[in-house]
Image 1: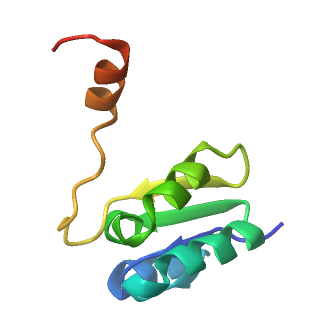
Image 2 (image 1 turned 90 degrees about the vertical axis):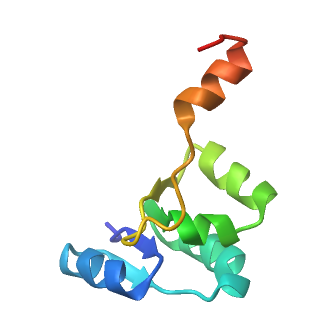
Length: 98
């Protein structure tokens, strides 16, 4: 079985590497290409929120919706980019007012 791949900042990547993940620290311009490569190679792809923000919206939606490999957005170390608010998104899609 192939190890998961983490795409994000160097400091967080060091921790994921210690946990057994393969890590890549793509520049913002290379985020979309790096995501496509990681999806072709690993059963699990972990994206920092900052890297997810650099991926094209269409490509990110497709990656998150695909049944395999599993793609997850994880918080970045400095929390400079907030995670998407899933609850608010679901409430808006369902027409539920909070």
